[in-house]
Image (cartoon, rainbow, N blue to C red; front, side, top):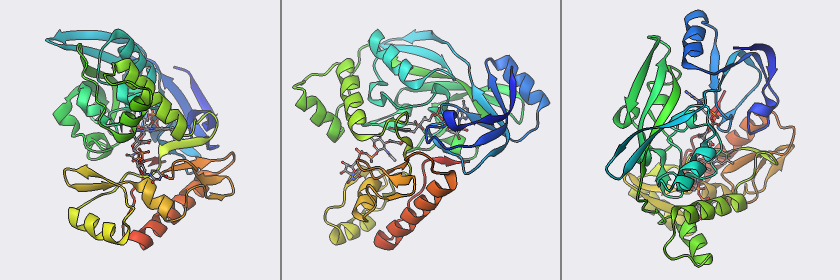
Length: 334
Ligand code: FAD
Ligand code: EPU
């Protein structure tokens, strides 16, 4: 394990925010993780691909980057393959690998940036599928008890952009591997509106998982900014879930309001709320709102974390005043 001091984080967060960590270390194995936590009591941050974090400034502690790699089939059940993947593997490389093997389940989650180890933290989701739909279990290091533990699906308490690891288990566990349950005979999920339209546009009636992957990649490339070109962390806020009563009241006042069905009522499209409040394409210095997706805040070059946070606060306030709806950030502000 090589330890660096005063390490730059700009290349390690997709917002491209300039910040430094007092110490930085890459952890390659479970043994080194155990060794590290048996010695160090320093304030620390576990970092994956840095695609869901916003640094408000320098990090006065140790940034620990997950660098554990590898994947293996750990079991097969009728119709299913169990694939265990180490935390440091790139998420989209694993999706591509599964699609090439003909194993179905993760294809709708194509092109989401980040590492496999972070995927359960907010139960990543896109185009009608969430991680939990093909999750089997995970292994994590419990920093309090200094042991490795296995969580099954129930233990992870997955919800919309939520899990046990963002609630009671926050900051206590380091995920070292995730096991997926994949379909040997895939059943493509194509109910999400824009995915269906993209497949229709390509004239594909009975898509295979490779077609779904291609369609999802194409939608994402058109709509979401590439962090290598324009700094961002995907959706900055979560889509707010409201009761049917609140939804109907809002719909009367704002007939164009976009919302999706949800077991608790309706999930409002925060992108619509922000756009309709006049923020789409807005820019203040180098902090801005993406011109194709108002839910995505962007760094045009030299924005600081504080400037992005100020913009996010102003959007939150404006949405609250316009619709009486409070937006919660999805991005982890460090
Ligand atoms: P990081 O940003 O490095 O970390 C995120 C959080 O997880 C931090 O709190 C960190 O401390 C913690 N963490 C990371 N690794 C571990 C670990 N091994 N153990 C314990 N804690 C850990 N998300 C979606 O759900 N759907 C999308 O469609 C989507 N699209 C995106 C598009 C773009 C262009 C971008 C930039 C982001 C998008 N995201 C999306 C958000 C992001 O990609 C996901 O949340 C992703 O899972 C974050 O992975 P990461 O490795 O970059 O995590
Ligand atoms: N919309 C607007 N204006 C905008 C953006 C969106 O009116 O500027 C409306 C449109 O009607 C559009 C609808 O909102 O049809 C939904 O937009 P989109 O399909 O882009 O999805 P989203 O709700 O904005 C969510 C996730 C994304 C995920 C997509 C696809 C959240 C917070 N975001 O965005 O996840 O990729 O659905 O499933 O749930 C992320 O979490 O970082 C992320 C990018």
